[in-house]
Image 1: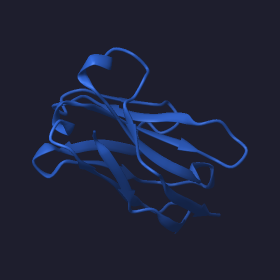
Image 2 (image 1 turned 90 degrees about the vertical axis):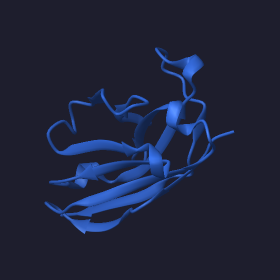
Image 3 (image 1 turned 120 degrees about the vertical axis):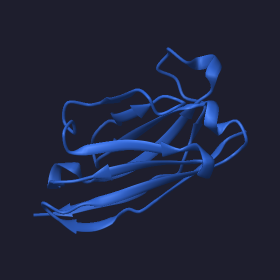
Length: 122
């Protein structure tokens, strides 16, 4: 029922910043936890960050902790990922995914976006 669209990706030099947006369609989005994931060429998809429905709890992968910040604005049906101090190793397609309340506490997600490309040059 929830549809997600990522935007904000692009090409930046190492040390630069990008802000990704995840726009949702669906009236139940504000009750969903949301995660950001990424997949680099030739690599498996990996977890990046997660935020609960109210924005009061966040969790980050060790590889991005201190550099990335996840936030949400339920009035706008949107979740954001602020990425600072980007490195070439951050190059990947970034996806947002929402988790219906019934799946809370699991590692499964209900809806996925199509992804947005982030490329960091040396």
